[in-house]
Length: 205
Image 1 (tube, rainbow, N blue to C red):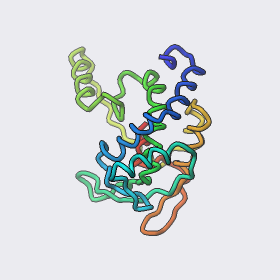
Image 2: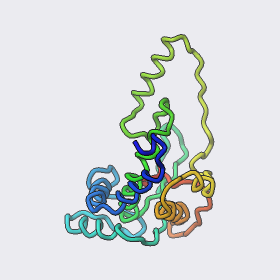
Image 3: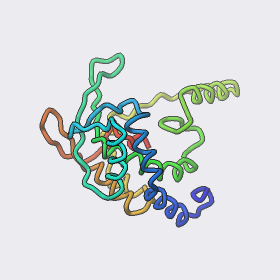
Image 4: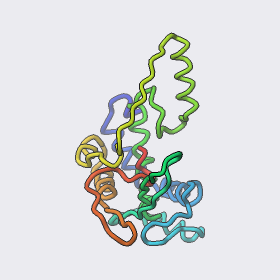
């Protein structure tokens, strides 16, 4: 509501408050260690938080600032094609911190996004997009444009993305680290000079 009514200072204050919340940290840990599909997928450190004790410990670890670890490169097949798509898997600690930061950022940005976009949006699905198309067609709009930007997510400019964030410095610092963390593919480290890592919790946002 603060974001919608243009109260940016209030919105940022609420974001900082959420980042400090113990219960928000517990929820972030729950999402990456219990709810998410990749909960048993480890990052470069090989760690997954399985036991309740480990989860409580993780909730404490993401309280402060820490250096992001490189991503673990995993290649998955593209449906119906021979080529493979690269995923970058962060460590469980980075994923939990990303979930926390996403909780603070998403409510700020959701009211600003277009009402007719459906990709990676909370509470929206392919079925909503199909419904929208059905309504448009019934109103006599018959033109369809199918466009794809080749390797779009792999080529996003980091500085341009960071300049668009409009968020507390702490969040921007975290996101910069995740973008610049680098990737380890078959034991070989590579810098990440551009692009957002597909496989992180915050990447879709």
